[in-house]
Length: 350
Image (cartoon, rainbow, N blue to C red; front, side):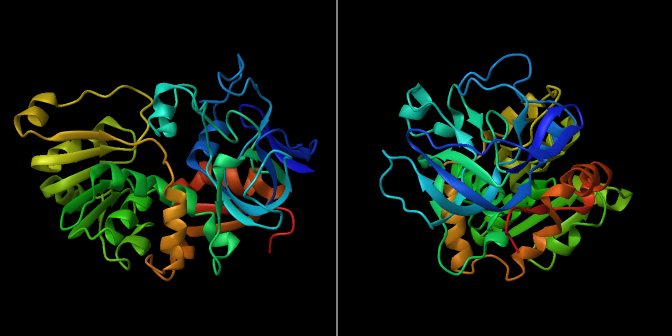
């Protein structure tokens, strides 16, 4: 089969790879569409989390590995001990891998498993014609959803999980720092969750086309006017979806007393945190890691048309697997702000 294999820093090659075989508790999926995640882009230019120097703590795998964990496809083979699933079922899958036995897993918080891993980072992923995954990652696609648009369910689940952790945002004013796909996922989750008003800050004008037609207020912080507007925001809930000290600080500064801060960004450098300001207003810090079962909920929302009718416009480019390096990773290295999601056609996808 054809697969995009990570071999080293900016060394991803589309090549012939051995087709994976089912093992106990797994199914084989024929991949139709896959999305390039920010994680994939960072690993391409990294590595960041890929197990290069020692085997992964859960899977025992090391690089080279096939990337990719946002995808849709069809079950084509089922291990002998798997029940409740059948060949031909259309699925969208979680990317998280867990041990099932640690304290977090036993509390049904497998997204923070002590040995947490991810498809396409800790073991072979979905930038390939076939992928084998454990059954606990499977979510059946509702009738009427197309496989291309439904690759968005995995990143949208991140925003939905964060809102669920907050206990909802109905009637609240919200600021979201960051207009990448994770910031936009938080925006959409807040919007369909009944937020009173949602501000989204981003660099440049590219993402205004999503935020304002969908009922939000976009703030371009590349301009002095935009930075002044951000500094004047006062909200009940603020999201940090970038991973920079500056965006963390402006999110905190925007919080009214008793406000809630949700951190979704991943920081390469530990930030300085304005603890006195935070403590004096009895503000509350939340953090969010991926999702639990929100992929299923997001697909249900899609089927119920709770999202904007042009949700598929979040897919800002469509490429073939063989073009994933130049038209995918390299394009995102050059023009990350331009894109929300790059979709990759795999196998027979049309």
